[in-house]
Amino acid sequence: MKPKILITDKINETAIKEAEKFADVTLDFGASEDEITNEISDYDALIVRSGTKVTGKIIAASDLKVIGRAGVGLDNIDLESAKEKGIAVVNAPESLTIAVTELTFGLMISLMRNIVIGDKSLREKKWDRHKFMGSELYAKTLGIVGFGRIGREVSDRANAFGMKVLTFDPYVTVEDARESNAVLVPEISELLKNSDIVSVHAPLTPKTKHLINNEKLKLMKNSAVLINIARGGLVDTKALIDALKAGEIAGAALDVFETEPLGESPLLEMDNVVLTPHIGASSAEAQVIAGTIVVEKIRGILG
Ligand code: NAD
Picture: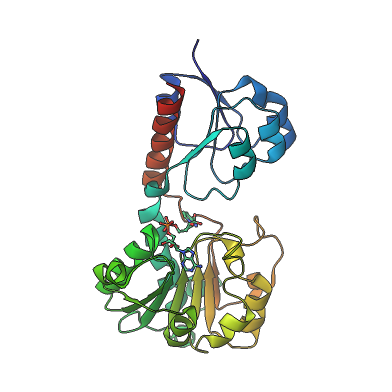
């Protein structure tokens, strides 16, 4: 009998076709926790992206052999419960690196050159060229917090822009950083004090929650900007809003939020803030690769 796979977030068509070659596949995009809990006992594998929260309740009701996350972050999966039940969890961390790296520069340049507010102003039939004086990336110092897959790719591209790169990452060596032409600093405070742009690329863990908090924001230059395309919880949103209002930092670009969807927020009213709705991984190329890598890994486990 073919194994059964339930897919509850929209993944790429090519990946679904690959899965259908060896399994019976059911698509139930956007299903709620209760709906998934009710149906999950029929399935051997569950594939999600970031939308579905794979809770302890869903896992307890299941006989799953594997949970696949077509993407990187596993913070929407209750890993403890999965481990207790002996359910394998697979993801595709390598698939989204380029998409996220490129959007990092999209956010950076949008912020530094006022692209979003310039566009908005033009659509309001204004021609306010004098209002939108920006700053170049060239010769600026970029501080990369977290020098993993994405951090390194960001560093490589920052070099091409003629930026100086500092990085803070407790788990990499000076030599690792040097390979991507970055200078590893021993303390995050050193990075924050000396960077014109701070870009966060660390994972969200209990240790990194609110890594960028009130005190850390106060260390940044008043002229500096913060980019968070990693996870919302890495930055204390209230502290960030206060720092922006007080002029302690000059701006922010955010793709991820402590609460998603964002809903009402003072950030929406700020001209020195660029916001995107968690689309870091949303390139057509990344989605094909993420889906197919996860389906391949699941095929390996289900046999
Ligand atoms: P990675 O695991 O390759 O790199 C993360 C790096 O962070 C590692 O080198 C690790 O040593 C470092 N790190 C851990 N704790 C740290 C700390 N306290 N301070 C500084 N560095 C620390 O992961 P990656 O593929 O580079 O992805 C980075 C993050 O980007 C992911 O964790 C994910 O949350 C996020 N992401 C977001 C999107 C999006 O759509 N916006 C898409 C993909 C990934």
